[in-house]
Image (cartoon, rainbow, N blue to C red; front, side):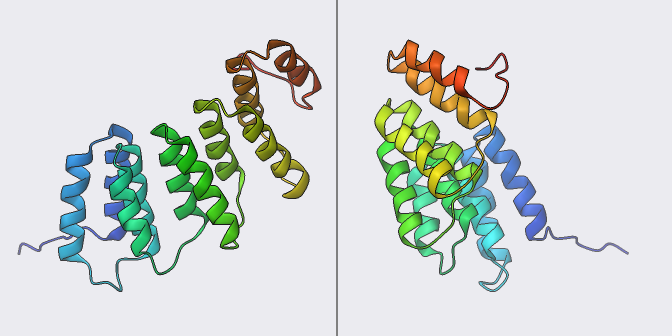
Length: 182
């Protein structure tokens, strides 16, 4: 007896993760076409949509990520993080910062991943003042404890902007021990 086994949404999410890791947009688009045929709108949940946003964003297709993001009736922090990270990765610093502002305006709580993505966008765009403001907002207003990666983004941002002394002072003031990446 032969039975057909069809992938469920968890399988699709894992396949999309592999497509994201490989930045394999054509394969990801094939998976999306399959999922559209396979799953009813009720089965096409937020986790699956977020996986598609991530796949498109990390594969360089901001438009594909935006198309899915705009159609979401429900969003969560992961949805926003996928968009912000995608913009940052693709060098669209202004779009990443705007998405971050929109996220806040819609009442979503940013987390450490959100701040890492938006600080990375500031780093790529050499937006020193904006990066420092966002870092301060993270610590002062959101009461989040920065991780080494957050500190690293600020150090990179200062160095990239030519503020070597300020970077050195920032490193010396960090409450965590810098590692080789800093």
